[in-house]
Amino acid sequence: MVTRRNQAIESYKRIPLVQENPETLLKDIAAAIESFLNRKVEAVKRIVENSEQLAMSQSDHVDPSFDFYNAKNLSNSAKNATNGNSSLDEEKDKELNNDVTNNKRFVEDSMDYQQDHPGSEEKLPEDDEEDIKENIVVTDDDSGPMASQKTPTESKRHLPLYPDPHFYNIPVNINHSAVHVPSNVYERSKEVIKGIKWSESLDNIFKSNYESDPTLSWQYFGSSTGFMRQYPGL
Image (cartoon, rainbow, N blue to C red; front, side, top):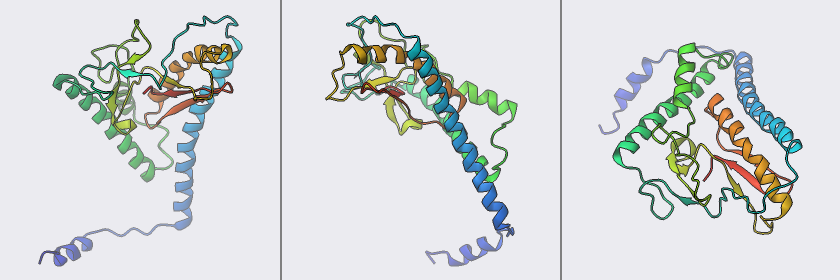
């Protein structure tokens, strides 16, 4: 038969049944969720603390011509990029895919591990930690896996963007953030430019958070002057 009913029945006979304590199971799930959220909270706290320090130490004088990566005006400068969409050559694509596949496998495995061992996800084996560090390295090296090339010196209108499965295969740059300024906010006003300039240093915090917790997704900084900084840049 097409439905293979007998095979389905036989397969269920080989499944071991384990009796669970509902109360214990609920506590384990709650502990896993709490631990997961605590890591996200710690990442946000690091952004907040460093933002406060940077804001307090900012300079009153800012060059009016200070340039930045404006998300509205960015062009993809990655090799073979066309109409804002990047396509890598075979060698670069192979390097990229090999590295991000390892990272994706770690993320999936770690999530499964958290579900099965809710009280143990905080501490991974040392070997695994080293592998994670290697796979999540953020670098400006042009030839490094997942690298996004160095900051273009000729213009802040161009930024190399590469598809990243960790960010839904959207072309992004994991070495830089980008700034979004709403249409009703004048991006060249003194206070806005001051905030954009000092908050540029948050890129180091964004990258550090991502290296520490590869399950992190998008990171943001919102300013009271109206702009938003988003990592990774796109």
